[in-house]
Length: 122
Image 1 (cartoon, one colour):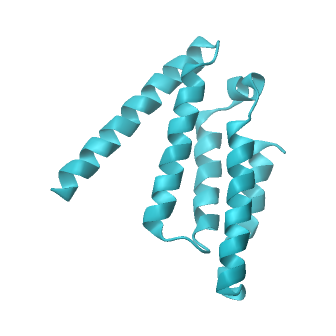
Image 2 (spheres, helix red, strand yellow):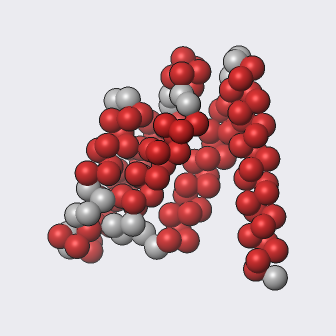
């Protein structure tokens, strides 16, 4: 399944939360979350090479909206941050210089967000 299709599939369920029983919503979101995370973490090097930052952020935004069906905002933010970090590491480990540089930039952005968050929490 392509990354765009993955985002579209999760977005389609974004407004269905009120129609689902809480127990079903929790199980459904957990199952889909595992499928999406597996797909994102097992992308081939060619898929990583062709992946642009905007597409990834759009899919993660659609995934975030989907997760709101059953997860609290702090848990969603933590999960999305972990996915961003895993992509940064994947980018750093690829053979493509452009993606390695993107990985360095992503790691830097994550560090800046963590520092800003820790300053706000003081």
